[in-house]
Amino acid sequence: MYKRKRLERRLIKQAIAIVSLALFLLILSLLKRSLSVSEWISTHISRAYIAVFGRIIGILPFSLYELTIIALIIFAVFFIIRLVKCFARGFWRSALSAILSLVIVGVSFGCLYITTASFSYNRSEVDIPMTSAVGDAVSEEDFKAIALYCAEQLEELSQQVERKNGVVICPYTFNELSELIRHEYERLDSDYFNSYTPKAKRVLFSEIMSQMRITGLFFAPYDEANINTNCFPCELAHTMAHEMAHGKGVMNEDSANLMGYYILLTSDDPFLKYSGYYQCFYKITSRLYLINGGKEVYFNIYDEIIGENYNNDIAADMKIWSKYHMLADISEFFNDLYLKINGESDGTQSYYVPPVIVDSGETGDDGEIIYKIQSYNNVQRMVFQLYFDGEL
Image (cartoon, rainbow, N blue to C red):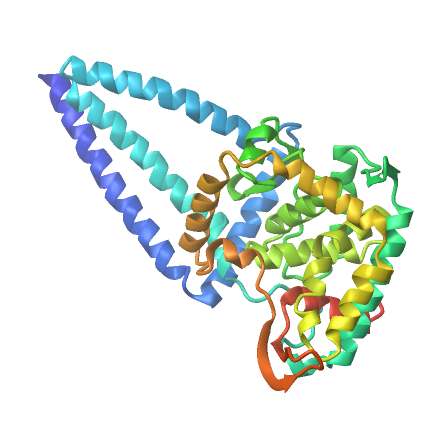
């Protein structure tokens, strides 16, 4: 009888704890809608947490996130077995208590995750040089000239990097590449970014990540940048830079992509710089062929300037990913859901927002509509500014 009453008192305490934590979670979710509150929590509470725990967990030579996932799977199996035994023996109070304990842990984790990660999704625009988004801010002639310059840079760099059987190879070990990119992040002098840059950690079960079409995953509570080691060399460099950007306080996916491109494109290292151009060149030239005189420039780039090195790399990259698709749809669904929950209304589409074009009212000699760019994408805006500043 005494044990039964003790269990009932525990259930009441657990229920009160869950309600209290749920209310706290609701308050955090409401506060997350405020830009000023999100900015303050991101740059004070979240930043302080990462400064401490990021450095501690960064000492570990393995992915604590991956280890946690393995442990949770094992725990789930034993937990379900225990519940079945409890219900079979009529110990439903013990079973309910175990379930409530699990709920408390889950809601507590939710509060921690919102504090360390979700608020950063609602920050102001990332602090890197960019032109105005308005199409008139950069003339079409400048757009064509910059596209040609970038194509020439891409081709020149493609000849400088190390190759094997015609395909680019990474001249660094995984850890060397991680430290090199971390060093590149030291160039940032804005208060917008966290001071600590997380290390990239290889994922042992990269085959599973590949089947899910996931190249990298940042886990904010551990400040860990988990990297799929099956990535193509140039993609590996950008994935590291992208996931590290999350650790610097840039959670928005398009902004993290942009941050990764910025770090690589402004590097003096030929492999990093080539990786930056390789990963974002199609975004730089996006919609180029639709503007007045753009089609000629576009075909000149791909038919005359860019040689076989870049095309060989594209083919090798596609070959790697052609065999991975088993869990892609499931992964896409949950990633899209996760991003929308965290305020990214476009979900996985937020990884890249294309330029906006409008009908100019004119047609070319071939009778096709000539378009005008109303607003450039963020990659173009950044590259334009870097070009004007002489940093490309």
